[in-house]
Length: 122
Image (cartoon, rainbow, N blue to C red):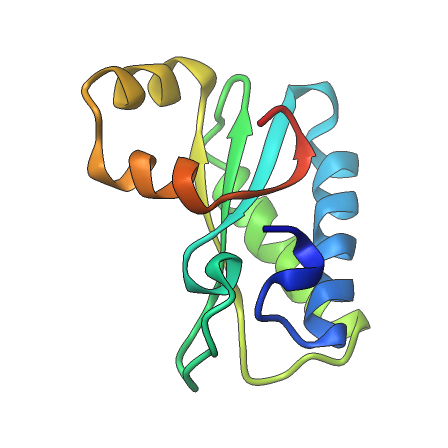
C-alpha cells in the first residue's frame, strides 16, 4: 500500500506529512525511519477512536523523544486543522527493532506486513 491508499482524510495525510517533516527537523540525523502502520495503513475505515499509528526508528532513542513526538504531532494536526484524531507514536532504536524481528515479535511482524514508509529506511 501507499500513503494515497491509506485510510486518511486529505487533512490527516497533510498533517502526517507535516509531522514527519517536523520530526526530521527535531531529531536530525538520529532519525532513521518513520512508518505508518495499523488499520489506517491497511486502508480499513477508521472508527471514531482510531489513532494514526506511527513507528519511529531513531538512533539512539532518548527519554524525551516521546514528548518531542507528542509536541510535533499536536503542532502538525493543529496546523492542518485536524480535530478528533491523534498521531500515536512508538519509538524503537535499530538494535531493539532487530532483536524484536529476531524473536519474531507478533507486533513487529504486523508492522512489517502493513507499514507504509513515510521517511527513511523500510
